[in-house]
Length: 64
Image (tube, rainbow, N blue to C red; front, side, top):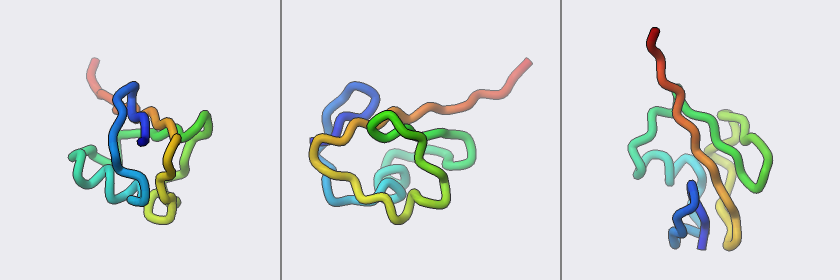
């Protein structure tokens, strides 16, 4: 199980890019932290999620 923003999901074995595509995140406007470390956007496709991982996905919102 992977914990994403506090919610457990059974997506171990998928890449971070695969998860983000199914979750409809705008990859240009987010940051992802995996187990306490920021994942560079260039590594989303090669970052394989493993059982026990903890992710925090933060969306940036513009405005004024």
